[in-house]
Length: 456
Figure: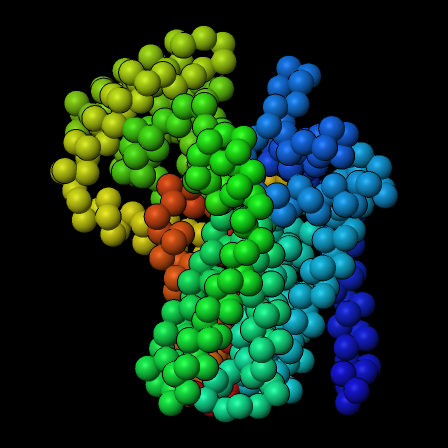
């Protein structure tokens, strides 16, 4: 920054300008935003981590406390339901991520790559877009980048030097803790760095130092979960250190059979929007299912029957245990018929959709963006965003396949583990890959500048 103050000043101004544009034009308060806001409001008004049901706060554990605490802290000074203030603070964090990403690129590649990485993240419309949406993405990306930065600063462990000191690993653990307190999948960050430390254990002569760092990292990362776990045990009498997989309270029914059936055919975000999210509460439309949802005419007839039975449960459709069991039976039939499709091909297709989709889900656009005749403007915007996304990924692939990167194994391992986790989900939402974009920008910067990252 001292050598290139003009660049960083201009790039920072551009980063703010892009995010202010999204705040001005595309504010989007989603359903989950209201859930976080409701919990934060009850926390401030009643001192309880609770959701409002029929006007009464009811204790809950469906979300981790990190993001509601962030909102509550802002609302304590800005006023209740001031989502605009939350978005402004998210903008500040996201611009801060530009500097973290640049620092990571500087350590793993070069100063030239650092400037490129800063600009790539500053002008990235996909992460900037989420500044205008009160969800966990912006903070999760920030803490992910910060944890990776301190992990790289703490390496190599074979050298007893200040850069690899204890402070770096404490800061790394705190950043991981921040990520976990925001989203349950933040634990993948600890798993990725921990797995890399195992590799370091076998390669490094300083094995005791590696073990010490691993224990320290685990303790610092997981210690903040202890109060939350104890609270859940005391209030609900269950061991729940994270939020439940399906964001449900202990007394709520989870349609596991329906979810399993969904995984036998769903590969794209559009189907999530059309079929997965409406359950429960809204009727299902058989015409929105793609042909791959049926292996035979009998299966189609069985599916039509189940849809009709679900739609007939009342004005606010609900999934009953009996219907759920029938969906489970249909799912087992489809899995038995094509196990390779269920266990490998569909998860890979869902992962590809999360990475390659134009990422329009937080924009006021039809999710069927490719229907050009229906809405040419949305189609053109979708194609433009898809092209930008692909350019980022191709540049990152170029950088990752160059000469072996400095701790590139750590960055790649984190992305691979996250992708492996995402393949287990039935709802391929493109936002789930945004936490990988700090790494994407670092590798893309190395690829664009032609500088291979240093070291091994």
